[in-house]
Image (cartoon, rainbow, N blue to C red):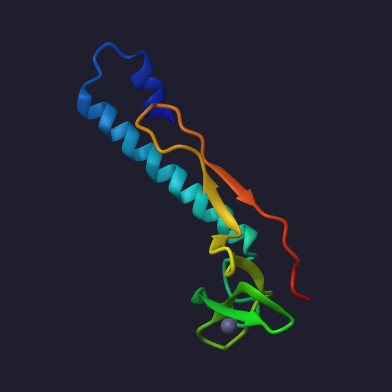
Length: 122
Ligand SMILES: [Zn+2]
């Protein structure tokens, strides 16, 4: 990020500049994480049937594989449904896609997305 790079080397940077840089970095990491999760959950940018951008998450369970919560994109306009992907192990209460890494105030931070092996419902 340009502002962080400038901040690291600038002799005129203030505390406010540092706070702004940290806030921008957090926002960027959040946006990237959200984008990766959408990709992992196979959410298209718009409905492939009618082109509507209004896709909402629909949750459900599969009787043949109990204990797992599934999610798929559902079009609010035409009712199109995408391919379900497993998102939560209900027995363990653990999300199948999780964020790992320590929350800290340090300048560097690693956000790791962990994907547990799971059967895909066909
Ligand atoms: Zn649609």
